[in-house]
Length: 148
Image (cartoon, rainbow, N blue to C red; front, side):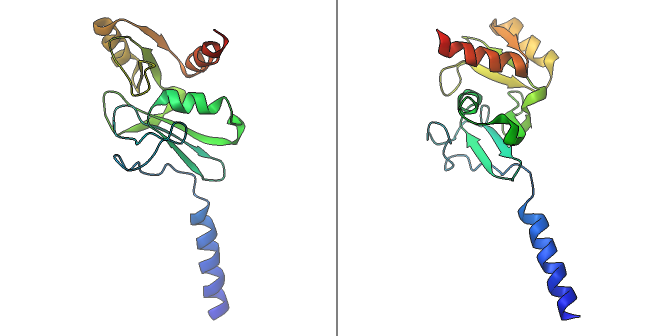
């Protein structure tokens, strides 16, 4: 019976240690993996989690996008950004709508905000101008930024 209990414990430990889920962001103390700034603004934080379960936190989506230029995206299981309308709520970055508006400054100066809902992004755009992007579009925008 002891061997069965030990075996069950080891299996449970292995299963929980390989969990692929985001880590809570400790605002005010966690540092950005890209720029080392302390993550404080709940409206702009981002995170990705590798297929091995390692989490990387960022103070802004633009830091995550810049980090991805030097990292193999195929090793990432989750891309997450903060929903501008719900500060502190991480959403699937690949399904988000992005707005770059000079009227909405972000922590690293890219004026980039993320939205869970495209309609809300369009409403914010009406009030603040700017350009909307999909996940693929915002990645291309950040790649082209280096070419200038």
